[in-house]
Image (tube, rainbow, N blue to C red; front, side, top):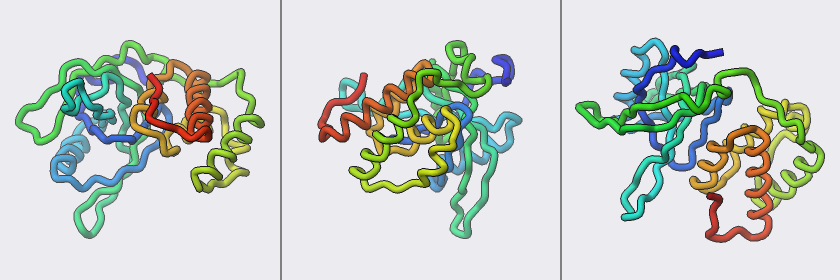
Length: 212
């Protein structure tokens, strides 16, 4: 378990629409913008190697603003391509609440963050005691057919609850606002219920409505 005191109060931020990282999950990313290449270079010099993934969202005036809750990931693998891009993998450590945004001499944003509300993220895998896997996979199959998605169904049947639910939350092509709702779900059960709602909504034809 990662202790609260082991986490920094300031981390670099990577706003990326639709990208969702969850605790104990892994997210592959391709880094190519100069400002984020600079961010990665600095991150790799730190002992914790943390990057805060966070959703940009439109404010009341239409200007982009950052969501207040994101998830920090540790860089656990990286490689450089011939054309100067980096392929990295983040391991989800904990969600955070964003306080003050910091823009200084660095070309990328950082933020003062609080980890206080998310101690559970830094423990072991969660269980979902009310999970009806058979009904869930039946709905998932209908959703994948409708969205023309493919997967290894045998692996899904064998996956542990948290791995299954969180992987699908990260990979399914939901809107950024819906991804944020999945991130902010307080428990694995709530995230699964949100996931079911989103799939059922998509199967009914969707629309402009998003979860709040």
